[in-house]
Amino acid sequence: MDAAALFGLSSGTWLELLAGRRWFPARADGARLVGAAPVGEAAALALLAVDGPRPWVCQALLVEAGEREGHGEEDRSLRVGGRRVVEADDAPGAFAALAPLLRAGGAVAGPGATWTASPTGAAWPAGGDGARRVGGEQTNTAVVLGEAGLFKLLRRVEVGPHPELELGRLLTARGFPHVPPLLTALTVETADGVAAAGSVHAYLPGRIDGWTRAIGQGAEDMSREAASLGAATRALHEALASDRRPVREADGARWAAALRATAAGALGRLAERRELLALRDRAAARRVEARGAALVAEAEARLRAASGVKTPIHGDYHLGQVLLDPRDGGWTIHDFEGEPSRPLVERGRRQLPLRDVAGMLRSIAYAALVGGGGEAWERAVSAAFLAGYDGAAPAGSALPPAQGSPLLAACVVWRAFYELGYELDYRPEHAWIPLAGLATAGE
Image (cartoon, rainbow, N blue to C red):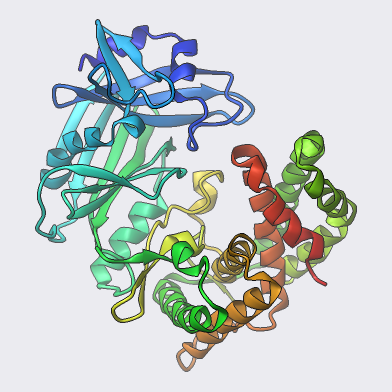
């Protein structure tokens, strides 16, 4: 593909191609190409600067397509040099064009950007050709390459060290058993610096993601598996605690300020869009608005008083980020990107491990509401997860227990406000879930 020809496309054309995708900013005002490079003869990687309330740089994979491919319910395609071009979301086989580069390593360069694939030295599992999407609509795009590697194309690109690659290298080098080995790191370099662009981890067939497992699962069976997940989570935190630092007063102040900003942003968006919510959700919205200041004040006070240690953490921990092996009940943890809407510099900082615990508790709450298990299911599964987490603590651990922790309660509120802002921006039909959690928080 002629990458240079892509620079002739207008902002409106890019918006027509990309608007409405889960990974593309919902309120984008415009988009312009800032870098592109050919991948093989028929594909190209592209970087687009997106203008809007929250500007960022997005990454796309474009591919020449047949006249029928990628139409779906509407024709979402470009015309470049007389050829029809679609985004790889609409033609997942396009990711196979990246496989040789990712396996062998090397670079592809074009106007404004150079992409480099760096294998870690971990052995690729045996596999064939082809590519298939997994995971449905996500903030990033995940593809199985040749049934050997799971490739994740990062859709938001920021210059600087990225936890997905940094922690992947660290845990792979240590042989940590609860993560898939990192096989290849993909980065992109522009005039602004080097940024993470994607990753390939070993593909683990036969696993079931935690969300799928939880939906419709009885409380007794899910509680047993949640206890095992708690133990795996504690093992991860103990491994990462080798890189710990003491919590300082400035950390508590920074976390409190971040909570306040997260809550203010979420409540501001809620005020703007309350009348767009379903009628049944507006009462919860009004209740959250009425008690929001009190929730924030209590959580802030607890964060300011935080003590103990801070460490690298997963950063966006929920049931969709864990995989169950039904053969032995073991769990694997993946996707160390952190909360994708937060600035990269923030995601790379050491944090309270209890923030991961809070993320999983909120995910269990989501599963209880969506799966119909209700409050009794949530209480049982959450208690089992916490018991498994605390029960796996080694003697002399530097990490605090989670059960009954006021600091954990503050982290749960923080996470719920983050979810509310995220859902209002990207999935407004799901906003009722964090609203329900915040409406009853602390009761």
